[in-house]
Amino acid sequence: MKKLSREDLAQFLIEKADQYARFSFVQDDPIQIPHSFSSAEDIEISGLIAATLSWGNRKTIIAKSNDLMDRMDRSPAEFIRGASESDLETFNGFVHRTFQSEDIKGLARSLRMLYQEHNSLGDFFKMHVREGDSHLGHSFQKFKEYLLDNGLPLRAGKHFGDPSKGSACKRLIMFTRWMVRTNTEGIDFGLWDIDPALLSLPLDVHSGRVARSLGLLKRKQNDWKAVEELDVSIRKIEPLDPARLDYALFGLGVYEGWK
Image (cartoon, rainbow, N blue to C red; front, top):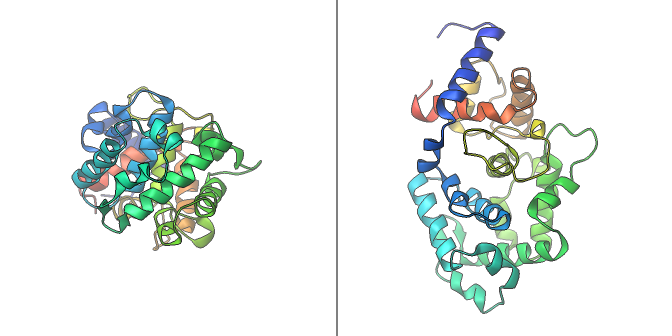
């Protein structure tokens, strides 16, 4: 593909975003897990769990996420708020790649504490957005610190990104798009009172390849510095709703095999 002008590139990406941001997207994506619930608490807890498990084959991610929802009797908020240590034994034997039963037990303990201290996950993330922040990186860092301080095993910390350690925070970026972005396509939920202009794009092998080929990203590593560089490029096109273009990069990379 020939090099596009900034105007043509913007039009191309917006058209691709509109092409792939359709409700049918939900059918094959882990976001279908929170879409199976109606209450805000169930949506954000199930969404966090599904996003946390989101690496590897998408069918497996969805199956494993549903397994955990079933173990919580399809009432994740009620379970998390009231779970005793004996209740947590329902997770015994669970494994998804390197995320194991003790990891989900620890996550449940830390979320139980968080809900005792905050009205919602959204409130926690919002309180850690500082004046002048251009992204949610500080909230990601504080969230991981909170989890580790309140029951998440140290070994499970690798499943939650920390920008201060260079992580691209792909899963937390995806999760916050689900929770923050309001849209007419019926995909994202728009539950949290956080400015969608602060959202970043999940960076992985597919989206990174597309972003580099289109001249949106020069950095070779898929790390936090690359996320920030991509933020700058994307916000020149969609400053108020940058995460909209996540659908464009995802569709081009996964469905069209963009090189």
